[in-house]
Length: 273
Image 1 (spheres, rainbow, N blue to C red):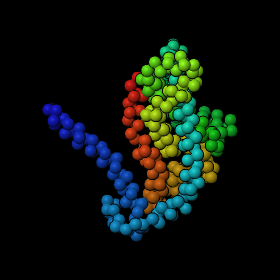
Image 2: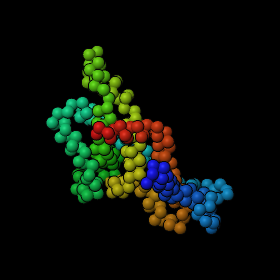
Image 3: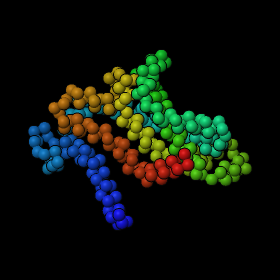
Image 4: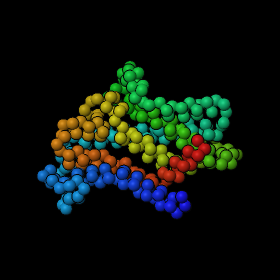
């Protein structure tokens, strides 16, 4: 196979993969803006602007409360993940002792543990500590299960930052903590954007933890509220599609805002990690 034909096949496969991912989103958009009595094909965009689906979904599914819960849980979780993950990764990247290597390997090995395999003991533990139906309980779970990937990425990225910066700052009298927050942390913008996107999407779209640990209706997150709404309004496809589109927009907007840092941070964080 020549280089030109190989490039052509790769381009074709890339376009095909993009279409496979975009088609469901396209159908979601067409269904969201169609009236209930519109029987046209799902592939055809409506020639009118119909917003009642969004109004009905927002009201009937109680999406205002769910949206607020998602914002609180996601914002707190991502903030703690970034702060704890970056601080924990700094000594792991800078001091290659046997103990630090063991701790790093322990964090990386935690990536292969599916959360659902320990759901029963986890549920019992959350009941024992009073974490059921609380914001801090669900935030604790998200932080715990997202830290291994975060530490892996931060450790790899910090390893690419020259040690000369540390030495120069310490010669100037800066302590380790001041050195990290004043010198190292501002240099972590690309990998921080990557962590915010990856963990933010994971927490925002979480269903497995929210459905078990936030059982009160007033504490339901967006995914749980939509799941319950779909079970009650299976015939109102337009309403469900509109609700799903509302839930997808915040993370899509954050990705578009941070996308210039995303690839740089992901590749740099994975190279040395």
